[in-house]
Amino acid sequence: MDPILDFKRQVEDNVMALGRDVDAQALSRIWSRETNRNGYTYNFSWLGRPIIQYPQDMVAMQELIWQIKPDLIIETGIAHGGSLIFSASMLAMLDMAEAIELGASIDPKASKRKVLGIDIDIRAHNRAAIEAHPMASRIQMIQGSSIADEVIAQVQDIAAGYSRVLVCLDSMHTHEHVLAELEAYAPLVSLGSYCVVFDTLIEDMPSDLFADRPWGKGDNPKTAVWEYRKTHSEFEVDTDIPHKLLITVAPDGYLKRVS
Image (cartoon, rainbow, N blue to C red; front, side):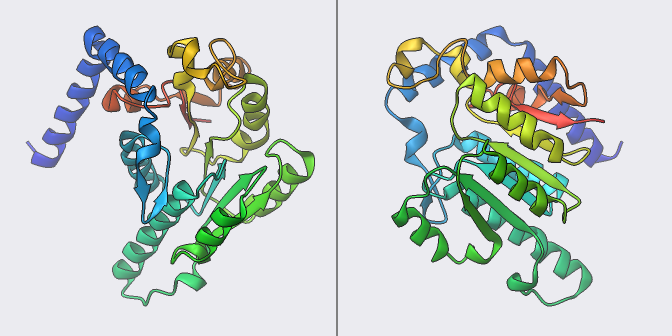
């Protein structure tokens, strides 16, 4: 048997077993609950910028980007810019790999690949740090509400020039807002690519973790995903990713476009 295929099948079996392991799933939720009481997701950075993500989800996003090879990554929610830097660095690696394969030179300023970030409030110190970063040439930012008509129109105009699009939603986490983002940006996702909805984990956590926020159980990204999928069969929830990760902020949030 081909050893590469054999290893792939072993991994698939591992993922299936983890998905069936009720105790492992429960322990993962307990771990997430207790570590988030102490701001666990705030502890990490990517190439010098805070990213505010689980390392496990960062690995999953790296796998998706390498698999999909997107030309454009759209992200709602910028915060400190770590996720934009992460995505831009992954696109730089794609360009490097393609240049090596073709025996061509690498000119980051000539690359068409781009990360487009949207945030209602890009704070001056964060904007300055992002614009001074070595990955800045691959990043474009739009300040405004991600669900404002003029912002949606601007994003749609930009996306029209790209063939492989990946979308990440990570801004306001209320049901209404995320559902509006899904309606606006999920249609931009190319076939075989993903719309990743972060922080669906809120639905699985105790309400007291979000006492100072406008979202919580019954009103969060996961409930928005459930609502969206009632009328959008072109997307399927990829359960293999959260089963593989066990620890993720996005259970039910990795949406793959299948038609």
